[in-house]
Image (cartoon, rainbow, N blue to C red; front, side, top):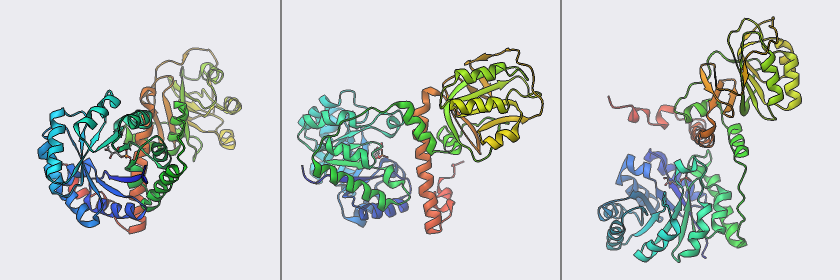
Length: 432
Ligand SMILES: O=C(CO)[C@H](O)[C@H](O)COP(=O)(O)O
């Protein structure tokens, strides 16, 4: 196999920024530039013309065509696209029309295998039809659910003789693994275009894929423990990132950090308790495991259901933290211990351990529903609840939010721009 191709996907909506980032990506070692679908939808064929005119490198148009193959391929090819990306899910007649149009204008066809149920069989059919490249691609929304292209890549690459590309959440390590599994083109978008230093990020991918290509070694895929991956990602993001990733989801109300400067990530052990009755909250310490978060909904906040001794017990067990929609006491000792507790009120008095209430039931804490096993992330901004069935997706989306903000922060700090300028607020105000 020749030296692997690094194709950078410009999945932005602002053409000015896309041009800037394209130049930086090429400086870092990118070979091809892909005008991403969002950019095409936002700027049309001008985006392809601009990128091709400016950089004169192999330029792709990610049209994601699924119908009228000839019309869409013709417009992209005439605008400068050397390769037009269409969807493998298209009808064969669309694929054939696209190939005819591409040949007419000296362009080539790459088919995106996104959402194809039987990728190996379909790849062989497409090769038969005459497409030029196969792109084993896991879409951004699929990545958020934990899918990645590595799993199907080697099967496809072993079955076709045309060049195979890989795309979908690739970073330097995954891109290198794709090369070792048979990809001759790696397509990288957000891990380069949303990074604060595009040149550096592109260079990292470049070095990683070249090293993998030279070594010729095939990588063994290891499945990571999902909870471990979720925790690792959530430790990198803030509660505002999570709120944005959940479409401005609400944080718990009236629950505040007793100890500032702390951040906790863990799965919920829930407790429903009565005002002042600290039996079930304390018994929950024996139910919770290392890394869990105890989340307590109390019927009132006149008397404390938590204090210093319960806190010391949590420290012994390695419990991540405690959230109390109710009252806590001994806050001076808790601050001394530096243990992350978030509560509604601080009072001097406790109640009696009568034992009313339940552990690991659905509760409403701070106005937000919490089920046992939901992920809790809390920091000085507040407390977010992530339903366990969406945890990986939300964690990945929150990481994308963080990466996007890091890029914008870089432009504000390094280029002295304003937020409104960078995100073109004036252009994207909702049309009334
Ligand atoms: O086609 C795309 C999404 O539909 C992207 O261009 C592709 O997934 C590469 O971007 P990323 O590396 O951010 O996944």
